[in-house]
Amino acid sequence: MTRMKLAVSYFGCRIPRHVKQDMKRLRHLGFERVVHTFSENDLFYFRRTMKDIVAISQDAGLEVQLDPWGVGGVFGGEAFSRWIIEAPELAQRGASGRPLGAACLNNPGLHERMREWTDAASQTGAEWIFWDEPHWAHRGPANPDGECCVCERCRREAAALAEQGSGSNVMRDDFVHAPKAEIERFRTRSMVNFLKNLIGHAASCGMRSSICLLPRGTGNQPDLNWIEIARLPGVAEFGTDPYWQAFGIEGQEKRDRFIDDHTNAAMNASQTAGIQTMMWIQAFRVQGAQEDDLLTGTRRLLSHRPETVAVWGFEACAHMSSLACENPRRLWRRLVHLLGQNASDPSTP
Ligand SMILES: [Zn+2]
Image (tube, rainbow, N blue to C red; front, side, top):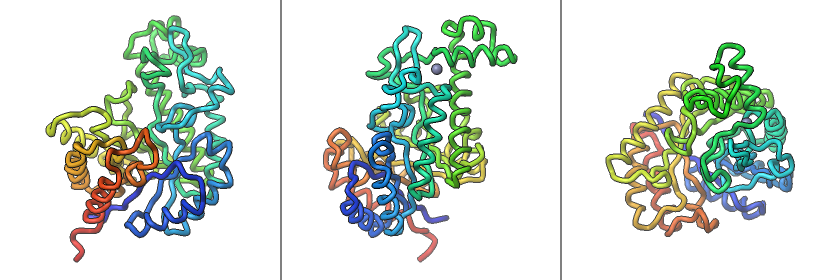
């Protein structure tokens, strides 16, 4: 059995001397990697600071991944997008005509801005990009009816694909009313194309890519072929975040199946692609009464022994009220203890 590398996400503090203390502490606790969020806000206002933060983290002995947190509304994270306000034509548009709270994955303007974001990320000196839960607009306040994008760009792309034989006449002539299965295939294909472009550009900047996909069946997303995505050129690591509590999976049996199925599928995709696996543990919004359940599920996930296990996020998110666990100090202490016990190679004395 191999040892597991421990990682944790870090966000919400841009004061280098405080970050320095925290990074040293993380290294002392046995973490070897930190995932720093690099939101649009950071891109606009903290470019040099982020470079300092990356250097501080590396000096503390941590490997760094940067996360496009909430960027364009198409990645996971509690951060707003200014891009879709500055350039409303980027936004996804539902059949009702409503602009949705995320940029369209087919919009070349988003691809261009993501290349600029990636350039900025590479200039910080970070080794990796962590592509965090790429998604079409979720059902939610910015998409109350769970609509799919039918913007001008999507219609043109769908028509062009239909012309080439990859789609029916309805896709060409009346995209809005195309069969759901065809629209889902189109959304899948667009996502793969988006990721391929991002990862290719990151590789040309000398950065490795880690991809974290949402668990299957969550967030109203089309079904993606994990092996296909793990095999995209430039992907060095693949994983998912089976946060059973956050995704409302209740009952021990369902919990265990959710963890096993997703961990097996992620590890299978990585192994098929010849890359490594990174799996996430929920340490946000965990209620006190749910702590034991969280730790039991975590033990189960650890028993699969993915190469890297990561915690979202630092100190069980104590500093961020909307994400904080009910008793973050206690949960963080228990989790760090559990991870420390499991991280080393059990075959080594
Ligand atoms: Zn669109």
